[in-house]
Length: 453
Image (cartoon, rainbow, N blue to C red; front, side, top):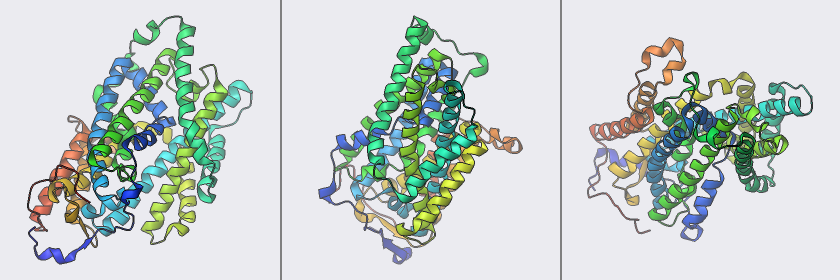
């Protein structure tokens, strides 16, 4: 290793959260955890939109390409996490600097999780409102339902509810069963599978292939970026990759295709109406709310904890930031975040690959995938910030995200696939700025096998 004048500013990464060898898990157990989280309200929304807008074959190809891209960068992050035994929040420190990881990542995590809290709360509120009116004849505004359900989810996140782990164990399988039942029910009602396989997309509903891929990417992009939180338990790189690929692709594909098929055979892409059209409206609503409840409690807790860390507080001080985060999420839900859902997905599909690019470039290219080379500087890392900003901007510009903002349409220049461009820009920028700034360089080839601990 060649050390230059900047080396004295380097400090080892905090190892307080490192997973010990005794805590490692099999790849199968990690994969099951990933697979169990694939069915959710946003999944139904994206799957339904892809089905109506691309037909079944087009939706399948878009999902495979989108999820395939996420799984690719996710696998590199998973292997890094397995090597180091550290969660994502710590894995970003070498690339962004300790202060960068603390403030920038906490801000990104907070914004993303609050946004998802708002989306899922709005979906559940709309579904409850529709069912109460259609089945019980009770007219209650979706906003009121969203406030009530959002408050329930927020309270359990703030005060804690041990029963959520049991709710989580049944929520996703129940939602999956409801979707599969819904497809079968609709096909029986139609009397033929022609309604599914013979479906022709109306020009007004059509979604382009690139747009469909970006929607699939946006749905899981951030989860792919935080792969280290689970992958740190993997005993080897092979186990980390297996748990990622087999835990995400099969379950994610089935989840989105079930939603797409359900939307096609019913002709409905509105999740609130969709859940009420499958013959089991009450069970469908329960499954949707339970799934959102478990995920949203985790979302707002993560947001609150991230902001607490950013403000210099420990976990005990996160209750107030969690409460504030949840209230903001509820405001987004009643303020119409669902109306901007595709724009939200476009932003997510740009943020996550750019952040992943920083992590991949730093560990795999600069530090040669060698744990002994991993260090984090105090403060903020210039290469990391430059790479994140340029990667994010490049993904937004080439992904067409600015088309949703009338005053910024001039910034939209679609080219290939925005998130892919963002990842590449982020990696290249990091390496170039790192070397031009004369920081520590490391000799030797990239370590391609699991390093000895």
